[in-house]
Length: 212
Image (cartoon, rainbow, N blue to C red):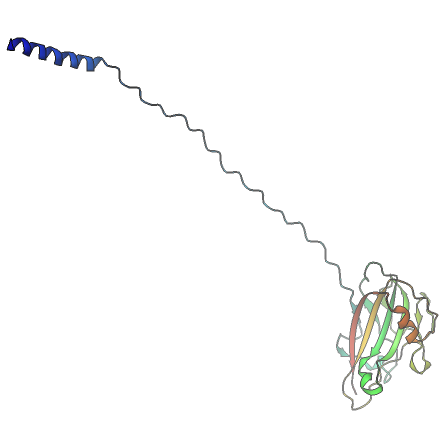
């Protein structure tokens, strides 16, 4: 009986071994193919628009003397008493005429008000300079006109610096106007200034000095 049990046990072990050898192995999971990673798309680069050309300033200059420097005696009452050459850049858009005023702000200390030495108006908008020695006439060939100033003098009256008063300043003011002034030639400087009121669209200043 014991021998029969032993034989049965051996047979059971052999059967188990044989079933293990013939069993089908579990399938191995196959990895799915990984799609290639596309390179990152470059972000669009912001483009800077080209800079617009900068408009030239409405600048007044003189070839006779530097700004804020001594006015040569030739242009004063101590010399030939002729107006200096002046030039300027293109005026603002919409300019119909130009007016040039020379004044002495230091006269306020002496006479109580600014003293005008010259007022030339209705200069054509396309004129960019005046020569030395503008004639002392109420009307000029290009259509521009000159006002009558103190002492009933038409046109330019050069600066006169009294001895011992120190350095005086003389301002050349160029005004761009949006109209032609309906003022007759030879009108007073006060009348011309009044007509300019409300029509100034640009201005430029050039300063000279004088001292005795």
